[in-house]
View (spheres, rainbow, N blue to C red):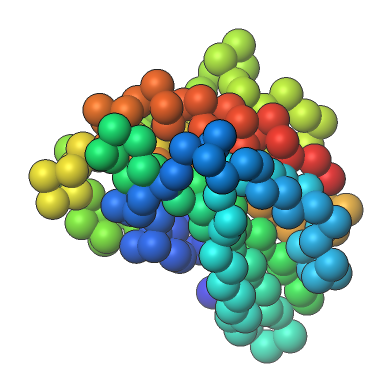
Length: 198
């Protein structure tokens, strides 16, 4: 497997766990802070509205190259709709992320293919423009939105991928839910991105 797919691989690796999940009112749960994550392969701070579940996985990409994944999923329910906040750290060992246009293109192509393979229909991809971007940080990034239908459930998914070259990691953020709570999804996404720091 080449490096380009590695950058994209994690965008949807745990997608099934982020679709159709429930969430809780922030006032009921308080903010759950994932600060100073101790794993040397994933160092960042981010806050969730509910306690996230955590999954870890290591993928051997080729001889001497592996990808360490750590995923956090926090869920809540609003107006009967399921909303999921999903953060995945991808730490590459044995090869460097470049941040090249080709690498980002591969990332996005893999993300689109992953959505289609997971059953999304009428999938629409929108790149977020600089003026509308929520992330205003210094790291190379790509912000985008998906809309699509999965089993009659029309979903909106706000996404951000941030490249931290110094630590050779990509951190992806995703907040998804049914279109009927579009404004809540957007607000949860803004809160998640604004809580992020390296």
